[in-house]
Image (cartoon, rainbow, N blue to C red; front, side):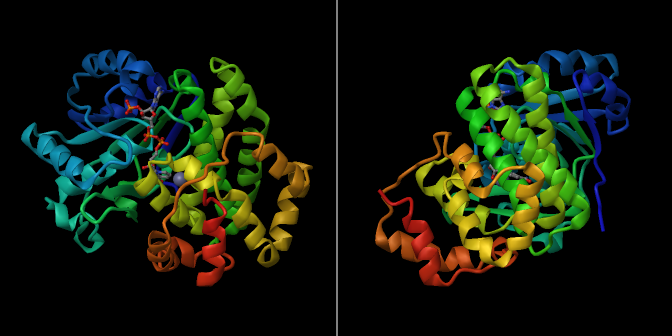
Amino acid sequence: MLYMPTRIFIETGALTKAQKYITLLGKKALIVCGKQSAEKSGVMADLQPLLKANGISFEIYNQIHENPDLESIITGKELFQRHACDFLISIGGGSPMDAAKAISLAAANNLEISQIYDSSLYQKSFPIAAIPTTHGTGSEVTQYSVLTDSSAHKKAGFGSDLIFPRLAIVDPRYMLSLSPRISLNTSLDALSHLLEGIYSIKRNSYLMPMIYRGIRLIIDNLSLCLKEPNHLPAREALATASLFGGITIAHTSSTLQHAIGYPFTTEFGIPHGLANAMFMRQLMDFYAPSIEAELSTLFDSLNMSREKFYAWLESFPIQVKVDLPTDMLEEWIPTILTTRNTKLSPRIPTEAQLREILKTVQK
Ligand code: NAP
Ligand code: ZN
C-alpha cells in the first residue's frame, strides 16, 4: 500500500507553479517560520507579493525555535484563532513545518497544552502548505510532528493523516543560503530516513527504487554541495533525496536510529541529523545479521561495498563524543527501548547491547 495525499511541486520556481493551489487553501494564512530563514532563504520575498496578488491576507508567526516546544504551539494556536486564519503556510526546516502541523491540530480541535499529544482528540485540521528551506526532514510530505515537551525534558513525535501538508513546495534555490554545517546535518537526516526505510519492519518493496536513488543522490552530491554551497543542481539533488526520505518514513516510520538520536538533541543540543549520524555505522553493523539480503541489494545497487560506504560517511565530521553520566545512560536505556520507533527495528537490542552502542560516543 502506498499513500501520499500531498501535492508536490519540486523545481526552481515551484511557488509560482503552486499558486493556483495555494488560493484553494483559504483566505487568511498564518505563516509559521523561524526568526531568520524565511527571509534569508528568499521565500518571503516571493511569497508575500504572491499572496497579496491573490487577495490572501496573512499574519506572521516567526518565533519558532529549533526543536519547537509545546508552549510555542499554544502561542501559535492563539494567534491563529485571534486573527481568524483558515490555513497555514510553513517556511523553514523541520522545526517550523512540525510546529505548523501541531498548530493546525491545536487550533482546529481547540487543544490545551496537555492535550497536544492525545491523538484521540484530533477530529479535524486546517490545511497546510509547506515550503522547506532545508534538505533533511522531508516533513513537507509526512504526517508526523516532532515536538519537545520541556517540562518532561523529552522530544517525541506523533502522527496523524490529518496533518499531511496539502502542498509541498520544494524549490532548491531556497536552500542555497544554508551554512555548510546545517547542509551537512540535514542531509544526514535525509540519509537516515532513507536507510530506515530499508531497516523498518514496515519496509515496502515499492519504495526501494526511490530509496536507492535518494541515497545515491546524497553520496554523489553532498561533498560538492559543502564545497560549493551555491551549486543549484547539487541542492536540487539533495532536496530530492530529502523529499524521498520523507515519502519513505511516511510509510515505514523511523526506527531505533531516531529513538537513540532524540535524547542527544534534548540533553546535549546535538542537531537532529547529526544525532542520527553519530550512530549510523553502529546501527547498520548491529542490524546487518538480520537484514543481510536487504543490505546486499542496497550496496549492489549503489555499486559500493559497506566498507566503502562507511569510509565515505566517516569522511564527514560526525565523530561526536559526549560526557554521558552513567545514571543518565541507565535512565535512557528503558525509554529508548520502549519507543514505538524502536519496535519497528529489524533487530531489537537487549539492554546490554544498547548500552554498548550508546557507549561508543562516550568521551
Ligand atoms: P530546523 O530546526 O528547522 O532549522 C535549523 C536551523 O537552520 C535554524 O537555525 C534555521 O533558522 C536554519 N535555516 C533553515 N533554513 C535555512 C536557510 N535556507 N538558510 C539559512 N538558515 C536556515 O532544522 P531541520 O533539520 O530542518 O529540522 C529539524 C527538526 O525536524 C527536528 O525537530 C526534527 O526532530 C524534526 N523532524 C521532523 C520530521 C517529520 O517527519 N516531521 C522528520 C525528521 C525530523 P530559523 O530558526 O531562522 O528558521
Ligand atoms: Zn529525522
